[in-house]
Length: 626
Image (cartoon, rainbow, N blue to C red):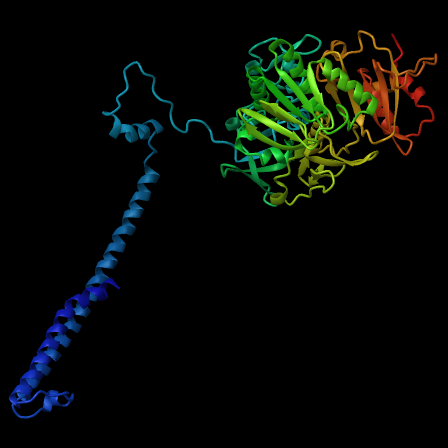
């Protein structure tokens, strides 16, 4: 294309000159004949009338010579260009061969030499002092692993339990935990319990607390020294557990056995656990209320939420907690105790008739509400939020019955939504009734993919398909998933428990389906000094009571020989057992200020038998012992 353009540039002047000569000859012929021709026939170019033939012959010879000269020039130019092209390609080819031979024969320059050469242009502009330490060499650290034999998505309790289980069965295993949180794996229960009762002003930084038994511990499962650096995991001779913090898995390729992170990095795996937990819900009226309202609202779930709410509670005049469940009631009691010292107004509102109204029978829910009030909390029952707005430096909460509450800050404690963001890309099934990933009895969603914790919807052989959002379930399901990832092939039969403490004096443990809409039978007795969460942890030696539970102790319980009186629906519920029934079979049990008896409750539900007299069953828990 370039050659044709060059030839045209050289021939164009000749063509224009020939055209000019032609026009001049035509005009000259017209003048000689004393007229201006309207058209000139082509034949007249060479055989025109007498007086113009000589000029036409000259013109024809000129055009012919120009054509022959142009054609000759074009041929010579094309041949020259082709010759130069061949020579150029030969030169480039020989240059590549020479460069390749130099790379093979010469050793690579050391990294320090390359860095010095790269920094040379700026050496004079920024010369370091003689005492300054040399900067660390770039790319001196190994890169993040592109493959993990065991990949755990999520950095919560279930992931940590799975990692520990994997390492117990496979001591040389290399386990990589990927979490979008900035922290190493930690336990969540103290965020709404013991941390709030700490006397240490720096508790938000140390995250250490005293349990009810007086022993101090950290919220983290293990110190940083327990883990292997993620960059060094691939080369770790004895394997280990590494945590990649601040990274989120955004896509999962099940067929390719790999995941993509939010920074486009890809990690392949042999076996994978999904333990993404859940996302705290918020009220739609709050989400639609605008930025000013959202800035003054906390949805409580993580360490950062605890730190943020602790700071708010030290500066605000009023905090309103929306929600009457476990989390809302625990935070209300914790903040209520702080209010007696700081003058903070603590308000708790919920749509039920009493605290934990969806779990406890009505008489016990009302008793609990009075207990919460004694902790310094203003309780607003049967409160349905209609709208929230920000006016005059205050949040204004309007209820459907016309009541208005003004406050500085809102804590939304209205439940949890399972995190199933990876379901679409991974092609995993989500349960339409309970939410979460549907798994089989071994907690498998695919042949090499397991799910544990809040995000797992599993089948309970006694109670049907369920999804559980409690610490003990995260521990047990994570542990079982880890065992099955190493080839155990065990089914999930465990009945997980959960507990809630309203301060150091009142607490309960529960197992199975505890729903206030079910028929219940309660058996109560007078409480003693040892019937408190504080005394229970002193006896067990741990504040995380589920970790000390074992199924084996269930068979050791012996009911007292002497009959004990049944205390039903009285004003003081010191300690007792509440049975939840479905078709005359016990499907749930709450141990009210009765501790370290959960294996007995677990066995009762596992047996699945009808009981003619639950008063006799209650004797198994020794609630009438002084």
